[in-house]
Length: 151
Image (tube, rainbow, N blue to C red):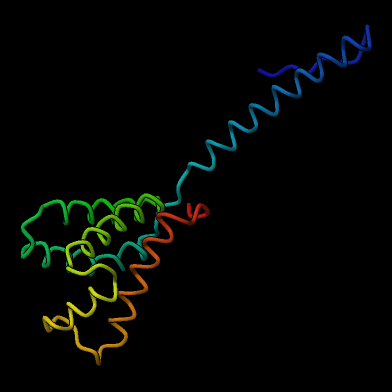
């Protein structure tokens, strides 16, 4: 328990005790702020319900993918997102995005897009898909490497 002395008696001694107590109060306050900042705010039931189609789609895709880590990483990312730990969710999901993009042949994202077009996976007409792939690649790298303000 924090005790702040009164200013009775020797004034300088009392001021020193008050300053010491104030320092202790500041330290304890900062510790409490740190604890409170780590408390996450989980999603509402309605928000969680919106994730169900994503989970179903993940289950369908995972049947065709032999690597169990793909599904495992994305399920962990979804679970962390549901708990309100958005940075953790983003880092795990971002890892999957980077992994997928690394599996596509090409030196840079533009070569990867050309490869996907040549294989008939996407077409030039699907500008929104092409733009999404390029934007996702850039944002994943930027946030993971250059942005320190993401929490």
